[in-house]
Length: 223
Image 1: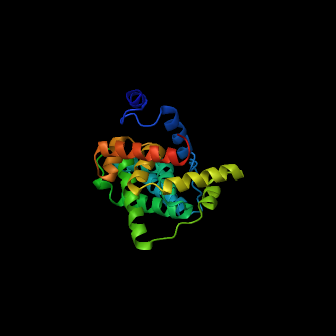
Image 2: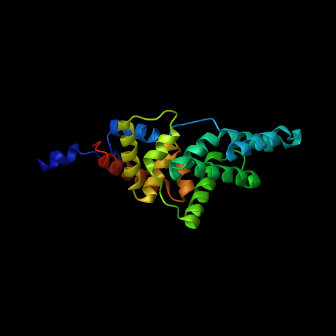
Image 3: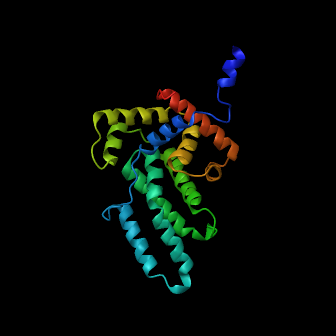
């Protein structure tokens, strides 16, 4: 009997059943809605307007700079989502994206053409966030109110509760597991890119992600 029970368990490499992983992925993906629009009256909107104006004035000999700037602008929605998931505050997230764009533009000579721009920008943004946390040690704001403010229409009460429970479960994870889960599951990065951002081995990323999903699924009652 004991051998039979052991044989029916998933191996260490398999982790959660696929349908549970898919369900968890959809829930995490819905935590922060995707958006492509940046209001021009915001500080970030003004930065983008200035960047676009600078790109229009770029001379032919600087086509490499123009291409780099176009890629920066195209990645702004992903950067905002990356920042918003981590801060839970739209204004703070936009500040982080703005700082990231400015730093990337100023140090574009450090970027190697053809390498992974997403991973490079995410690294800058993540370091910006870590530095801000060290300096400011801001208090965590009410999750329910934050999430409601990011949606195009107010969610119903049941959805609000689900968002609150998901965010609380996510916050309860060890930081390295939470960060790995966000990078791979929410931001959709490859394990190799997440490893480069977090400065660890690919195997470590896979292990952290597996443990994070298992713990989150158990907390949310998905297993």
